[in-house]
Image 1: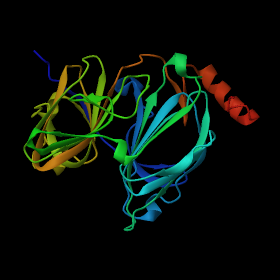
Image 2 (image 1 turned 60 degrees about the vertical axis):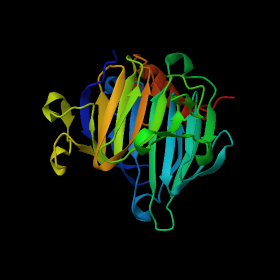
Image 3 (image 1 turned 120 degrees about the vertical axis):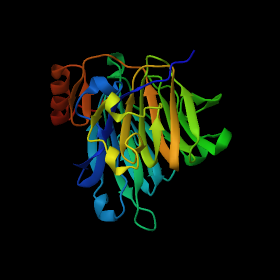
Image 4 (image 1 turned 180 degrees about the vertical axis):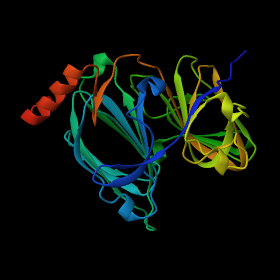
Length: 301
């Protein structure tokens, strides 16, 4: 019999200033990496006006991670040291493996009304792949399959598999699943997960009850917006839900429906040495990376 995951911890994304002055909300990052392993950081850079995001993320380095950018609205113009350049538009995904080192920039642009809607997730690379050759996968909206489940539940499959439908992102080291889930009012979504994989959800619209957890005091919470909702068991916009181990998750939408990102992956259980955009396994490796940046030897052939 399948074991439904319980909630381990709920957090609320916090206002943060990043890049050249982008106002965003950070779901998690720069704290307890064991809690979200193999994922390191989640940023929600939705904004209502250009002054919140227009300064963007000018040229900066990455090493040792994968960055996953997913757009719901507006666009991001990008370029990198590999020669890739283009525009990430509504519904598109950029999945970048920084490997041994890459330098890139991301400059957000709003829709005709000035709004921007996007998310960026960082996944750690295993020790053996930290210095691998960087690569880039640009996925367009049209390439991402949509699975229509009973009761009008709709799921976009970016990576991994749902009901025999595979997402277009492949060859990723931590066997991740990345879904964009839309559940109408009062309907229930159940999704099977490898029992030992880390599983996380991020609500970006509506609200829902996750894994039948009716008692918000049965799990750890950090700044959770329980009392902004009709019932404290309902988790809404900006909520990060980290699940305990188990075979599946289950989500029941509330009266306003719920939309959330779901991602899971195999934990690396390796030491993390992290400063800014570079993530290694030891402090010496981290120092070496920044030394290479200063010497101009960061980018490898």
